[in-house]
Length: 111
Image 1 (cartoon, rainbow, N blue to C red):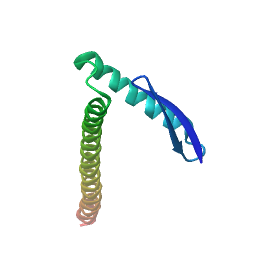
Image 2 (spheres, rainbow, N blue to C red; image 1 turned 180 degrees about the vertical axis):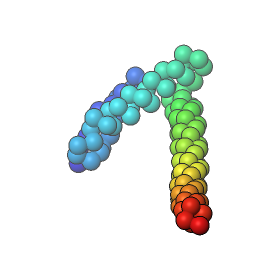
Image 3 (cartoon, helix red, strand yellow; image 1 turned 45 degrees about the horizontal axis):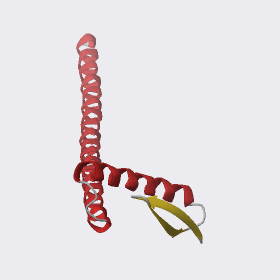
């Protein structure tokens, strides 16, 4: 198990993670630190606990928006897939109709 030293709001924390995940954990900590710094800039140093709760809520809101966007894209994909299926069915029906019309035309020519 690896350990990573991260800094959030000027405080160092030792965090354990799986081997190979150190860089990912460092990026996540840097993101949280940036969000904390933005909050400090707007509301001041209101205490570590309050800042972490506020940052957690801001990040949870961002995640909620991301989930909603993914669901919207999935719904759009399902709609697009259904439309493509309908177009394929329409194309097959038109091909069938064209063959029938050609058959009728051939019989009329022969008559």
